[in-house]
Amino acid sequence: METESIRLFVVDDHPLITQGIVGLFTNTTDVVVEGVAHTLAEAKEILQERGERFQVALVDIRLQDGMGMELVRYIARHYPHIKSIALTMYDTEEYLRAMIQAGAMGYILKNTTREELLEAMRAVLQGHYYFSQSTQDVIGHYILRQEKNTTRNRGAAPATEGVHLTRRERQILELIAQELTNVQIAEKLGLSPRTVHTHRRSLMQKLGVKNSAGLVRYAIEAGIASPRS
Image (cartoon, rainbow, N blue to C red):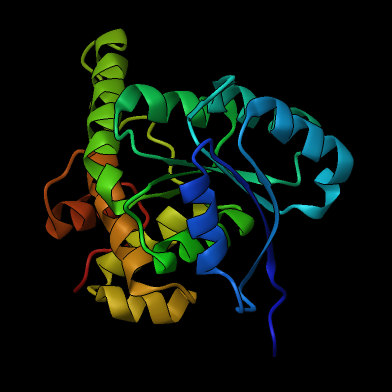
């Protein structure tokens, strides 16, 4: 069955970037670029005119007349059906945290591929967060810092106490505990192996473990999986 094209809004102050993204999806059925803006003011004007047509917004962090966080916040408030993804050259914790807090559901670096960009758009439309593979270390350091702060606030509480896992993370963790490979997990859940790999790395960073054995141990201790006989 033919899938519906993703309707995309691109906001970046560099025409070369916007033209490049438009070119990536020209003559394809995966994505239709419905709008392009180069400034914060232009983006808001376009949204007011035809915001209901967009499904995903790719937003640069630094625009000529403001910050991408402001636009993402504006979109979340007035056009909640649009899923925002940061598209940037900055792989810093400060910007990543700011964009996610503003309402972005993805964070992609500009050295990404067409395939990853498409994967990110599909993920956020399904209600999932998506982070570029290149930002995994930044995410890991942020999560560990948050866990250390939580541990400090709770005294001697273990680092994984109170960690919230999404439904998808619990599904993947349970299948990891069954010793399935990324490819096998991807087939079971209808995901790409790369997405499963990203979830696996994110889980290790989130739970403070170094390998799959640590994930299995956590799954058993948390009651997500039963010990193998």
